[in-house]
Image (cartoon, rainbow, N blue to C red; front, side, top):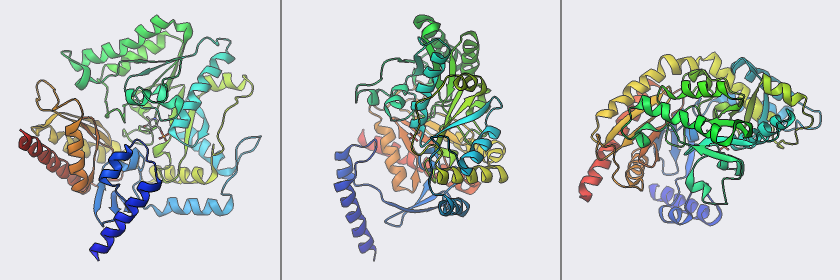
Amino acid sequence: MIEKTKQSTEEKQLKDQHHHLHPFSDPAGLKKDGVRVIESAEGVYLRDSDGNRILDGMAGLWCVNLGYGRPELVEAACHQMKELPYYNTFFKTTHNPAIKLAEKLSEITPKHMNHVFFTGSGSECNDTVLRMARHYWASKNQPEKQIFISRENAYHGSTVAGASLGGMKPMHKQGGLPIPGIVHIQQPYWYGEGGDLCPEAFGLKAAQSLEEKILELGEDNVAAFIAEPIQGAGGVIVPPETYWPEIKRILNKYDILLVVDEVICGFGRTGEWFGSDYYGLQPDMMPMAKGMSSGYLPIGGVMVSDRVVEVLEAGGDFNHGFTYSGHPTAAAVALENIRILQEEKIVEKAKTTVGPYLQKRWAELANHPLVGETRGVGMVAALEITNNKEARTRFDDNGTAGTVCRDFCFKNGLVMRAVGDTMIISPPLVISHAEIDELVTKARKCLDLTMEYFNAAV
Ligand SMILES: *Cc1c(COP(=O)(O)O)cnc(C)c1O
């Protein structure tokens, strides 16, 4: 019986290898190792084709905030598909799910944001933002305000604009990116780049690089500053406490737009509805996706501030949009997702009970010999693997330790992601205390195994 399952896994892997090109993957590596086939999921657990039960410490790709297997979301999709599976929102049309979701998003986002431009993903949001911000300034007769200031190691998606706005060097190397008109300043990553400065001083310095860049480019040429409240894919980089207040001070001084990319932080991840609430930010545009539908269907949207909408409304046609902007079935699922987040007080719990418990247990890992730092906010956290706690050095420059640790995690029933030698988690918001205990116990065990691996290599 077991033999048979195994074989069928191999068959699936082979077929996948023959016909499927995977995102962010080396085809040769996949060929060698084979892909993991995930067949079902319930709550915070995945099940693979060999019957292994795996705790999903990443909520898929930071998105399954409600956990797997919520029948209400399935029913919402089913009901909507029977009534109106698809219609567009171009050409003077709309439909009930888009109307209701737009209204609901206006209610839960910051007060000064009351309009949404729907998309199918986070990347599409950031393509939208690039064009919308430039259109905004052109409509105000300041068409020279074109440049976006972003940050090194930011992640804003994988389309041409998304990857260009992002600051990931390996992505820029392919396809001739970034496109013109996008520049990147230092990220507020104290552990990796803080040197001898204390976190507070480094946070100020990283923030002040925004002002230096604005002055260098000329305020009249800058359209917007874009940033994630907490960098996610870059390694769950929680900025030092001095960072956002200094950024706010600078933004108050200059007439440029603030785009806060909420694709990960939105919908409760930080213990507030949005990262902007957590840090007290006043965005002009807010890209959202991922947790918007708990990943059950693809949907995203850019929330737009009243002051920007006012200008757009006088600016004529905005020649931009997607076939699936406001997709009725996806919108119905997003609405149901938000209803459950509200009624079950899941965001509140992420702030008052589950989040604090996760952070308390996670911080205990700091005493492990391989751990240089732990950090986190709400339901997202990271730790740094080091071979020298004081010097904050790595075993090597290739992120080997992170990869080794991640592979041990997979083998031991835990999805924990590696970004270089930074291990990160972002579990479903509905994870229980007992499941958090299991996550932390498994993480410690895999850190032990990683240490044994390096000791044996010496
Ligand atoms: C994932 C992500 C995106 C891109 O979203 P897609 O839905 O994958 O296109 C954009 N911004 C941030 C902060 C993200 O984490």
